[in-house]
Length: 341
Image 1 (cartoon, rainbow, N blue to C red):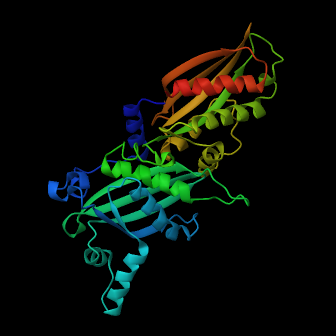
Image 2 (image 1 turned 180 degrees about the horizontal axis):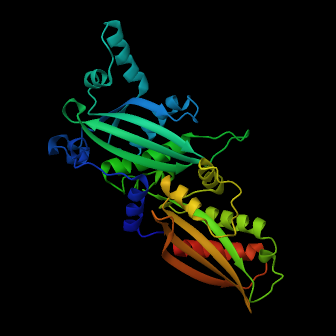
Image 3 (image 1 turned 180 degrees about the vertical axis):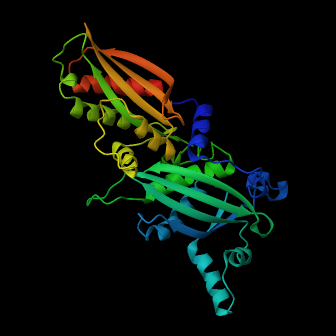
């Protein structure tokens, strides 16, 4: 697992988020007066949800339940569901008054009103939350949360619900400035930390010095894809990284009409530029070299720079002697977890 302090830095780098000089202390129950501390929780209302054009409209309604879970897991906030909010808005309409976010928020006594944007890039979900608070809701703090869409139903349709919650939790960590906001929740499935996305670039094969009939060296195209899939799967259990699957990576390349990328050759400057431009800053590549008594796998964690180059952060090597894809998988899984520890 990456060092926690570094992980927070990488996360902030990815989302390009600069938090304003404002503390959520004004609306955080941990900073209220002693008399109110145990009995009053800041009240939060969602004013608006905007979806990217690639997302189904029914997700607006799902946002209601997702935010209730997101805030409820902390036990530090009180959430106003859509039904209560819309009831107050209906009252304004019945009186021929405009139900603005400000008017409804004031009437329902919400200390915070939130504006939410959700977008999808491949299998990656991004949730932007703008929270307005203070007198007349003039003070703003924003947060971004990312999560991978990993769940499908029997018809292979995306199940968005758990991923929306996960992304919202990360956005709330950013908004509150508390990376441990969900570190001690009762249900372990809701233990979420800020996390940086991690892209998998390539796996190169080197058997020039030692010609080999080993399975891993026999089909570069197929085995490089397999190798990167192994690394992706190994990273999915880590709390402080968001592993980006190859489909999502390739959908980023497609933005600039880059197709047919080979996973066993070095990434081009063009490829690195498009990854950097969408905010993917950290990447892993690998090399498998045949040796006289087996093979050596080297994994390198790098930063993608603004000059479309790779700046090495850390590199580890491990040997393996089992001539099988399963032998490679065991070695690669252990090595990746050591690299990201």
